[in-house]
Image (cartoon, rainbow, N blue to C red):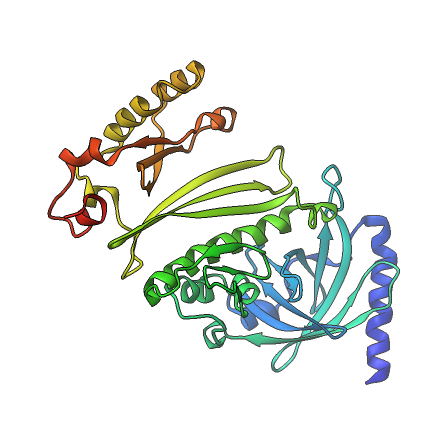
Length: 367
């Protein structure tokens, strides 16, 4: 066994020697014959590189990647083969202006339970890789059961592995931090389990986005506090059967410029389900929202922005506050995104249009 391991290491080192000129790990295009039969599509593996825990996704449709479980940041892999050996070439972009460079090479073969082989970085000794096939449906939950968590386990098990670990609850119980991404999101002490599950699912969405964003950043910016994905959330309304919140998101994922967006939500405090604006105000069509919005902002908005918003047909994201219904344009082109100011329509303005039979009517207007 020792001799065979040394032979594999020697071959891998030779691959690097040949790859330094070509910039790759060697091999030819395509997958080993055994791989499609072994994976039947995308397959998930967990194991280690030289004792460091990793998770790896093999996907014949060009979405092969892996991450070290202590970091949760995807590393891109390009698949090739050498005979019946699977070669996975790891690439990293070091700086914003640079092209990706090869930072590691896997050479893997099938075993009864998964994959085994070696990984080597330029100028380093090879490390043994052992990976076991994982059934996503069998992965235990480390968080409270919620629809989003179950959907993530099935639909994106790599993301599930990153976030499915104990989260950090604030001492007052009013917020929770997801440790891999750092995303903090509110909770409602004493609130229904369904409501807090809905808040967990919203946080899951942002945590996965934050980790994806960090993976797109060049290596020198991945720990830069000015880059990445930042979520700021406020609970803006809690009364009767309604809870409302506003998420402000800023992100710089290594592209040409930073960007951001606002997302509002209205939730039922018992079920956690979204509450549509038309449930309370049936006539609040997109056209009516635009009419009310322009009236609300016309006295304080820059004339150029007013002209843009009059001509555009923006969607609106909505949240409630004690002052009324808050509408914020969404989907504007980046060049005019600064025009997306929030307009507030007082509840009294909308009372004649409200559905008094709605169970949420008294939450806004009293009895």
